Image 1 (cartoon, helix red, strand yellow):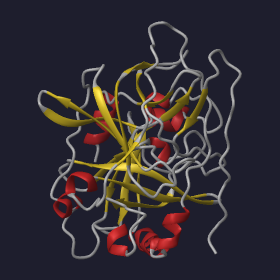
Image 2 (cartoon, rainbow, N blue to C red; image 1 turned 135 degrees about the vertical axis):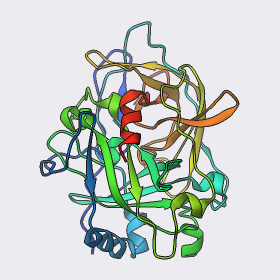
Image 3 (cartoon, rainbow, N blue to C red; image 1 turned 120 degrees about the vertical axis):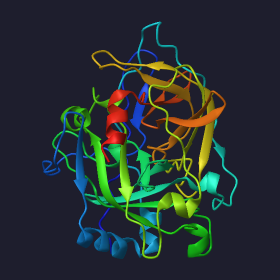
Length: 331
């Protein structure tokens, strides 16, 4: 029997407007201090062959994927400044299956082990010279200040939990993580217990190790997403993810379409985050935000925080500026 789950919690805040905010994924404390090499903008961990073999054996049990749950919400106040206008609620829509179509399969589920259980997030295959990069949220990869990188991280492109066979559930198989990076700002400032000034840096990426007989993730899918750094603001975006908290179960892919506004909190560093309307819940964390710029589709952000107010259900994503670009180039 696998380790027990940490029970999901909801933090209710007594603030103007009845704001409730949760991290759409995972924050946990009490982990070991990091031992990874750092640069001015990022920290990294490279998993050994033994750790990759262990990850493959661990997730051979398909039931563990179904057990993975988002845990540990984080509370923050929505900004009261008139400069930060909340978007309107947008109901998430189910993405039609099958998910083995390449333009859908670039989005997938991330599963990993944390103290006390297994957890889930979402991610996107982005174009990179390695052909093996997945973009997601930092809180899906590392526990923040006082924490460590998570274990047994696995990416499943085009995951469909309603499939009846392994081939239907995992049409492109399972891809274990070889190397992962998040920003130094995340490791230094992310607080797993409360409002975090590291939220604008809630992005990360990893390189997968191709399974035996496979050349690369991009070669296997035949496509990938272009990522745009320092993109224009106030875009119309589409977000994608695998929400796993009520009323969702993490088995299927959902999407929201919404214009963005800006989001920031008192004391948070620039750049301000992006804000959109969406009802997706925990588990969608790390899922990509896409926008059309100059006639082409780009990934411009990823799901980070979920914000529920009396007037709207929304989510935020980090603005992918220079630090995100340096992280990408660091692989």
